[in-house]
Amino acid sequence: MAAISVQGLTKRFGDVLAVDQLNFEIDQGTVAGFLGPNGAGKTTTLRMLLGLVAPTSGTATVAGRPYRELPDPARRVGAVLEASGFHPGRSARDHLRVLAVAAGIDPGRADQALELTGLAAAGRRRVGGFSLGMRQRLGLAGALLGDPEVLILDEPANGLDPEGVHWLRGLVRGLADEGRTVLVSSHVLAEVAQTVDQVVIIDRGRLVAQSTLADLTAGADRAVRVRTPQPEALRDLLVASGARVALDGPGQLTVTGATTEQVGQAAAAGGVVLHEMRFERSNLEDVFLELTGGKGERP
Amino acid sequence: MTRLVHSELLKLRTTRTARVLLTLAAAGTAALVAIVLLLAGRPGQPALGPDALRLLVLVPAQPLTLAALVLGVLGMAGELRHGTATSTFLVTPKRGRVVAAKLAAAAVTGLAMAAASSAAVLAVGLPWLRAKGIEVAIADAGVAARVAGLAVAVALYAVLGTGLGALLRNQVAAVVVGLLWWTQGVERVLTGILHQPGLERWLPKGAAAALTAPGDGTLPMWAGALVFAAYGLGLALLGGRLVARRDLT
Image 1 (cartoon, rainbow over the protein chains, first blue to last red):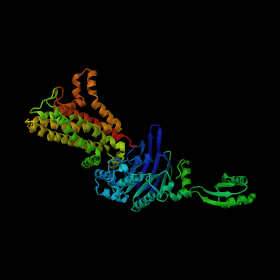
Image 2: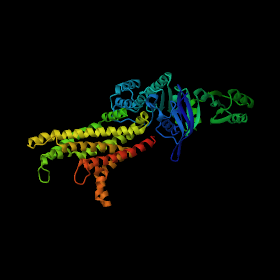
Image 3: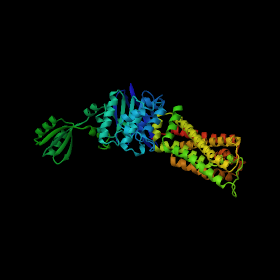
Image 4: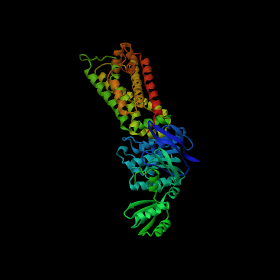
């Protein structure tokens, strides 16, 4: 059964079409990355999924129902959203207790959630003095309060230091191992590549790809890099045989759409000298940039 | 619903705002009552008689109602200002229930402020009057009615503030609008422009005056309470509908 389902989801803000006929499903127990450049519509999609923004058309369901119709949402779905804030004068522990009381969850869970997110020592401090990383952790603590089966995390790595990012990966992996469904958004594929089973990629509000990580790289173009004193001659030979060739620099070619064997054969046939040839698997980030028109930010 | 009201009251207890307002209600009242007692009997000031308590319990009415109004605005609009609305509405996606819980919590806090204030009136006023040899009856129906009326008025001002905060999503705008309406005699000006002198007592602040400053021009206490409550709840209903429909981006 799909833990998260988005069907024909569309959101228009005035003249801006933020999300356009989006369809995807995330199966129960899957960790999925929700990727796209900044401004692609990720946050708007997640906010529609969570009942905070009303879709212009289409539907979004979590745990089988539209979020607003879930009888006990805090126990089914936990979410960390970018713009969610805290009252600066309230302590971290009190923030969680307020949420717990409203959700009918034992307020004692607040201390457990602080423990889980490494905030136990700071629990009684006012949030106003918290760093960005600590606020992210507190957001996660709030999401985990109801021990939910589905977690929706919007750019949770923002503001975390490398150690924090490492910790976050471990936490998400641990939650997945317990059979939970996790949808985690990011504008940097590398950030989630080690954690996710599946990716949903959007750009300008539209679905660009939904696949497993393995399929994503398998489907990508692989490149052969060649160093030769006769680049133009080799380029013409390869282009004639149907490959795509880019001149990278003096004596440097990048060939796509041909294997190393084909490149070698073409060189031999044309009497071109090769100084170096290597096969390059394009990395995930390149695939991502290609799919999203290269507008994403590099890490 | 009960747990939502508890959560809202916990919100108020876990920041400084409500605590400061309660302390101010007690301390400010004590100071005001002391000033009135000091000046009593001088030219232009009321003399103290057996009904002095009736006068004293309403001395803090103006600052108290203003504080309650601000408390209501901050409780509602503050959620958007600090971004806590997101987590609040994630836990309770039926937003109308959140607004209802906020109204209840604001009313309860308003009652507490009024109680703290009236206690301060008695704590300062009774020994003072006794020292001056003025006998006052504590079990005076007029005093009891004024204490109750003031409590209702303060609670309803907090309700009205909550509605105002829901209607104008911007906290600063809501506070400014509230202050302008409250301090600038908008209702008096309006009645003047319309040449309808009888209208003022039917307007929100005029209706509330039946409880905070009862006199010849005001409605009977019960009618003032009803009219003012209708304004407060009407505004809250309108604001609540807006809050429920707005996108939280």
